Image (cartoon, rainbow, N blue to C red; front, side):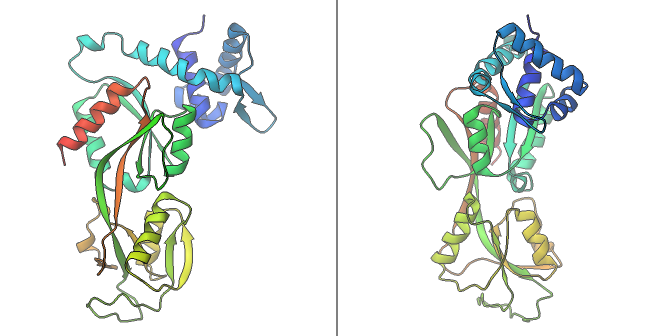
Length: 291
C-alpha cells in the first residue's frame, strides 16, 4: 500500500511535470521519487504518465486520479485538526508575483505568523495559466485578477481587494513633462501582454481615457515594466501595487488617469469543491478582516 509520502510525490510531479523538480521539493533523490511512482502504478495497475526521453506528462488515468489523491492527502493532514486551536495542513497556491508586491503579500505573512503549522507552497505564474492548473487539480487555488471571460461552472472567484490602474513615466524623461494633467509623451509605450487578464485591463484603460499611444515593448511582468520605466525606456499603465512606496520613488512619476478609473480586482480562484476549503476559507476571512 502506497504511503502518504508517495501520494504527495505524485501531486508534486503533477505540478512540476518533472521527477527531479518534485524530488527536490519533497526531499528525495530523483531515483527514489521515480521508484515511488513506479510502485504506485504497479499497485493501481495502471500507467499514470506518458513517458518520453525529454518529458513526463500525465495521461488520462493520471489526470483522473489527481482530485481523489488530493482528497486523501487532505483528509490525512486534517487528522486531529479539530483538536488543534490553529490552522494546519498544506495548500498549493498560485500567485501573481505582483500580488505578493501588493496587498496579498502582507496578508500572507500575517497568516503564516498566526498559523505556524500552516504550510503554503507558492507557485508564480499568470492568471490564465492558474485557471487551467486549478481545473486539472495540480494546484488548490490561486490569487489572480478577475477574469474577463466567464469562468467554468465548477470554479469560483472571490474578490479580496482592488488596485487602480495608473499612468507611470520616468523622471529622467527627455520630454520634460510638466506636472499637469497631460499624458502626452514621445516615449514608447511599454504594454502588459495583451492576451493576459491584466492586459485586457490595460486596453480598457486606454479606451476609457481615449489615450493615443506609441507602441513599444510588450511584457508579461508588472515588475519588469516598472523597472524599464525607471530606466527611462518608456512609459506604461500598471496597477498601483499596495506595497510599493510610489510617492518616495526617485525615478518614477505616477499620475492618476484624468478620465474613468479602471480597477484591477484581485481575488482567490478555486474549485467550488476541493480538499483545502478550510484553508482557503481562512485565507479569505483573514484577508478581508484586515482590509
